[in-house]
Image (cartoon, rainbow, N blue to C red):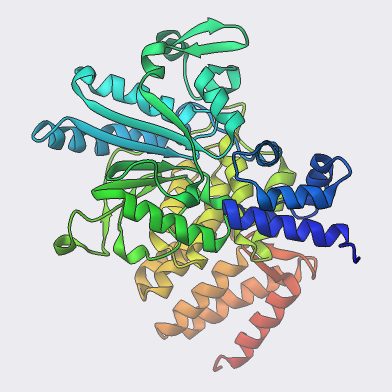
Length: 465
């Protein structure tokens, strides 16, 4: 009888995991997946693969695997901009509407992990609804990992979970307990936790709001498409989908209304077929304070370099995952927002791209790469004057920005300013030749100094004297 090799068994296990959960484990864990599976198999890898195939996700073998694959982290009021908008924009309208009808509110925290997100929502509802006991509130947190749900139901959290909150918040809603702080029973009672697979459908119909933050970035495209369909169908007309800071809708974007705020993009299911539109609503709300604390201004250089490398290799999904980790530690790190702007622009998700670039520039107005990318977006949409201004801003911030010089030269040619194009390209060529030939000229591109020099030289030779 033929025995499958370990690599074949690992590939088979990866296919089962991806089909059943949507997690892109083959791409995400790569070489580490084999180590994880071998450790769980305890010497019987074929038996582990059979068990994964034959048992439901509630089986111990699956739950041990989910615990081993546990990814990302969460904490109270993560994504400050999202919660600010939830409190100041979404909730007031929704509450006013329901006071005219029935006092019903239905919210799903999908992929809730250890519960910080649904408890944050519950606390905000408690603060916004003085008559909360009169409301028929349905606040559901779901996750595939039973161990995470058990921690959520216990409701005890260590110091790290409170890093976006102050002492007053902790004293108001938590009491000291062994191992940390435990959430008050009156807040805990507002949340119902369920074990659920996102691919299996919603926990309830006609939802008003779905939170699904930093979950879909770990899914493969087929699963993302399916989950986005589930979300759309589960929302009541006019309902809201709130994704993570680094996430965007991938499929059928045209049927959603995209709301662009400072520091956040949110999606709304149209209230009816008659008012359905694909347009964008730009809301000029006060921008959240995104300034980083003095002790946390930048991540480890190697982590950011990994994101740059993934971007250059056009592995956008991996770059997103790394950037999630960076922004979870340093939400005010402007270069991470610039890279996200580049990723979303490459995917033609321009509202999301613009939001991240604007965020980067609010954090650091001298981010040359952000000005350059805004210029390229303007250029692609035919806004020549805006493109010109943005590209000149990039060169003002960094005189040696060769990509901006290349693009600005194109703009000058389009407007008949050939001599200006010549001057700016000659200056860029001089700077490119001064660099190490094989060195990339930007975090946003794999174009090397040698390649840029050749390109500029070709452009200059093609210009009329």
